[in-house]
Length: 446
Image (cartoon, rainbow, N blue to C red):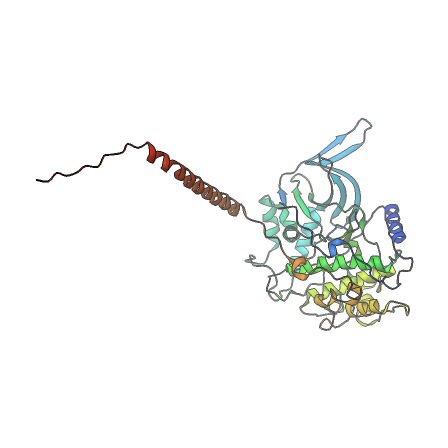
């Protein structure tokens, strides 16, 4: 993955470190990329138990950030955005670049820099060409945004509206296989917006392109990462989100080789009871499903489109190349809609079946997520099942400030009630013993 939010991005990274990482992976698994899955092979613990969140993750929105330039005694200049020291560039796209950064405590982050001018152009373009479709978005939009709204947002000091959909989606997410968002910053005096996200130090899982090929990974390593991808996408879909740009460039690796999904720049968020249908063709052309490659297509299933892209991604990991690669979009879309993918005869039959079902051209017959997580290749013939759907897709409901304050007030009231009861129980006998006793009076009769 790159951290960029463009469907025509170009990612640049340190090629030597990428090659070294791929070599280290291959020394841990069998040398044959399409060999049968080892009997009894077990996946990491994260595939069997959902890691608990460390607690509330507040996403900070800073509208008045400051950029400073420091210079050391050697004359080397360093850029700083608030508390973040910008280090080397690790990726780039049409709307800006991605940098390694660290804060004053030394904690590392990835900072995604956006060009506000480029974002404005994209927003205007989207507004002018937007076609009205069936109700898809979350409630709260009272009217369709116009070009004047873009100007009004920035005049009101709210430039973050240029990326508000990506921010809204990432704020909602908390999952081990999804990149975390920490802070978004606007520097009013220049052209930059910044998004501070989790640092995945090993970078993109693989870099492939129309004319570039990567070294394929062993089948068992592909299985581990594809299981990560299943858990992450299953969680997104359960939250009413379709990614719409799943590809190796948008999948990052942490120090412990955990795959995380990033780049929600073209993602869509739906109502919980929605069919999650979309008519947009945004995303990377080589990863688009056939139903989005046809002229005049209507609304299509967003979840089925994501699953097709997962299939193309798995193919890339296994073979180190795109199954469909053509600079001519018309020819590329024709291949996606008509050309069969040739799979080697020696391929694991279970894996062949999975790829065939992932890349089924009819979205109604394409494998569904509930079937995908139970597929024999994914589960190693049932010996290595994924954690339950309910556990994987659970959304941690964090208490609101009002609920916390109400809870504290209620707890204090309960404590005071108990204290009063105890004090009363102790004091009544004491008071009774110390009180003067009145002698009974007798009435005299005549």
